[in-house]
Length: 608
Image (tube, rainbow, N blue to C red; front, side):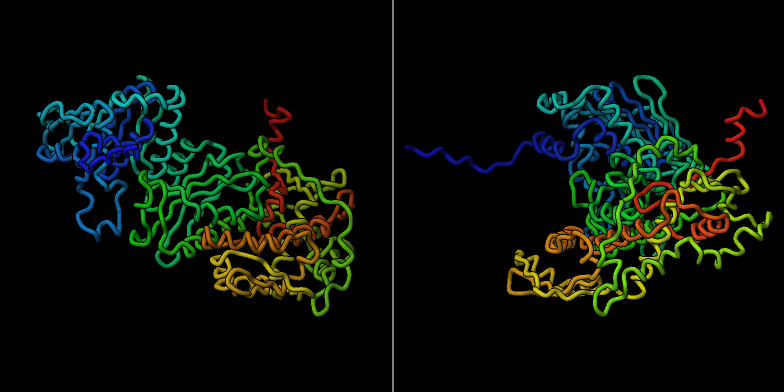
């Protein structure tokens, strides 16, 4: 039986090369729109207009007032690897533009009927235009009427690649993808004016935003009124990193990760290191299965980030991933921690649609006897720690609350005001300058106790327990080496982990707290190593300890139907004002709400 002949090596036709390249960067009309808008921004545009037909499948037209292209250079714009954005290896190692490969326009032109007109001059409306069909020039560059800037028109996308065209969805679906891309680009540059039409109808008008009120207005247009109302502005710098933007309050969360925008040097990216850092920052305040919303901008040295890690440039690679991870986590976590009660926050009207999403059933029963007893030899008593941290609101609260309600001063009304009464043994009703405050006393006290327990353990160190029979874990050689490298991290959280041969480790000590919970120590260590390998960071050790402390806090806080005196209620309000993250309980539910006098008047139709 004869063997088939081996095909000879040969050069691919230029048109086929471009179509292969198009397959890497052009998935649907939204992909074309992204490339054209990024080119406009790179050209220094201040105004961009977009016209789409049939979700971009029929036509995409983008005009900008950027720098423009000289007539003699327009043919080069449709040749692969021809670009004005890089010229040497050093440029490639510190990319400052959104596009740089010189592939976008020739790739788009190879699968569409394409034309581009451009004019670099401000003194004349005469520019140059060139057209192509399926990657082949229809005509050479010819004079065309064109104001300063560039106009690109892409018609009949994938007309010559039927296999790709059949994978496009309905007009409605493709338009939705285009809308999402437009908002992502619009949020990346608040200083750009943008207008959008679809099928001849005006759909979006975003004015340039220079000052803070204009930025908030644009944020509201792009992300919605609720996000703008229920978000926290943040800003932080460290060495060569700077981050600012907005993150949602934990009580404004999503069922999916659909309102998350993260930019690195103006480029919209999806990055597992960043996603992991933000998830860790929210882990103490977000209800299980919910996702935060955010619009964040990270500025850093371009040489410290590789933007050439993905053909569509959606992903990047940080040269110091752990450093970036810790910076993002710290910045977001600090902003969340500072969500203590302030005047005018927690308007009940803002949360009407989300409060019902948070079902919370307090755990019943007592703590295990070993936790409530004297604890382990050489370690502090769990019960004494809990009581000291909780400062339970009973007789002892009278001493520290003696001024809370007796010396009310109208001129210095605290954010949560002063207690009026207790409702159904569950809620505290208080009055402040804005109107009525409603506090879930168990949820609020649970957060207070939890934060005090965490602080106590951070200050006193983690009590450890030696295992009578050390636990041996079989791992891969890479995991065992990683465990050896990260021994100090494990030790910080009370784990004594030592390498034991090429493919195993032995665990000799664990945190005393984990003795009280149903924690599979072996699985926990494996998960930590998986995180370290994937993200160069892990919060599982801290999370495991915090889950035990959270359970202790739940049992150690005031229960429903516990009768409190006015002074005790006021003491709880003052503790809330001084406690980080006290706007949410440990499970992500809001701990208090504000009803303004205006809202109360509206309920009773006063003034009508």
